[in-house]
Image (cartoon, rainbow, N blue to C red; front, top):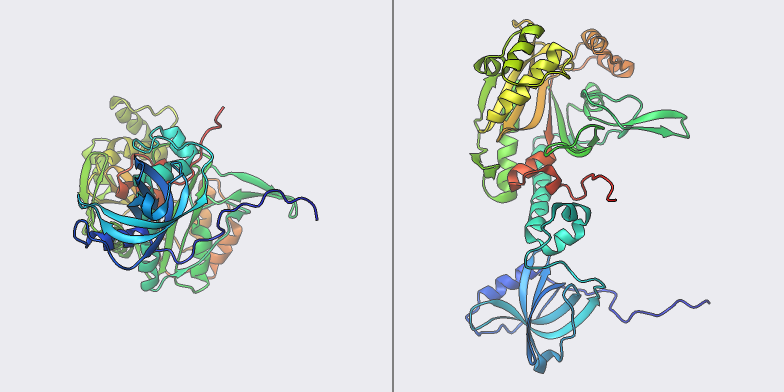
Amino acid sequence: MGDLGPVTALPRRFPDREEIAAVRAEAEKLEPEAEATDRRRVAGRVLGRRGHGKLVFLDLVDRSGQIQLLCSADRVGPVDLDLGDIVGVTGTPTRTKRGEPSLAVDELQLLAKTKRPLPDTFHGVVEAETRYRKRYLDLLVNEETRRDFLVRTRLVTAIRGYLDEQGFVEVETPILQPRYGGALAEPFVTHSKELDMDLYLRIADELYLKRLIVGGLEKVYEIGKDFRNESVSYKHQPEFTMLEWYEAYADYEDTMARIEVLVAEVVREAVGTTKVAFRDHDVDLEPPWRRIKLIDALEAEGVWTRDADELRRKLAEREVDTSRDESWAQLVDHALSHLVEPGLIEPTILYDYPVALSPLARRKEGEEGIVERFEYFVCGMELGNAYSELNDADEQAARFAEIGGDDPDYIEALSYGMPPTGGLGLGIDRLTALVTGRETIRDVILFPALRPND
């Protein structure tokens, strides 16, 4: 055998450890200067050190929280550690004279040695670019960052729990697609050598999920990544996470009621309350939410008209740059985003959209040119989009032709008959930003897309 190099003396494992939060809770029940009799084992990273000589105080942190270690030279010997080292500890819960929950250490094992100095653990990693590029450092030293991502995890878990309980089936649909659809967006393109064809990273899950409704699964959902080769902003990333669900025998009014309940229930489960603070606004997510027709919202701003030239003139009077808007539908969308959406602070459902903005939504009976679609907003930010699904194959083919699109396989699926269906998309990143009070979704995406760091 060849030379395998030096063998590390550090332990390969540290079994039977408990979460720091549980040990801290046990110590909090003790009287000052009292010490428990049962020993506990914890492990984590050393992020603080005080004292010297015969008594050293260490701050030990794991995912659950932090506890102070009391390292007496009489019990544990000299403490030769650097900030950032990972250690395993055996000791007994205690409280100091000042009442600080602590662990009196009997055994201290080095499990991993840091080779680089940590950032300032008092101020944390505060420079945004560093936080995004070196998320591991951000998580190490910023307790709020760890908290936010645990909130995100609890939100997703609660969403799954709610939908599973309501009889929905979680499914997976292709990320690599021969045709992209389900939204108006620019895709990322790749190429399959084996198939000798271009493929697209999906921009939405919609068309595949509705194929499953045709197939009889009736209530389906997916939580997964979508990709759009477009701009980046506080609410946009090239790679983002969406929930989409589709429910047979339901319409957009059923979906309105369900999303109000889902958001309130999952936020309450994740953070213990439905009240959130975002961008200087305090709101309550409890239903019922405010509901406004899109046309009424535009009329309130004095810009509703079906004439493109007139609408462009009205927007110009409001100093809205419409130079990139080529159609009436684009002008309406611009009017919504610039004039209406910023004022939707309380949880609000904006509904009944023009058909020109909604190629996959079902027409509303008795209202010419209107479809059963809604978007929902909190603190001026859109959280998602929903509608009664268009289930007429011939009309869907005609709508695709109007916007220059084509998906023969999806049209064929619809031709076998899709029951009336309500569908919805919810941005997981935006919901997390709202609940945690973060200014941008980059703060709640572990590894956001960034420009090269030259």
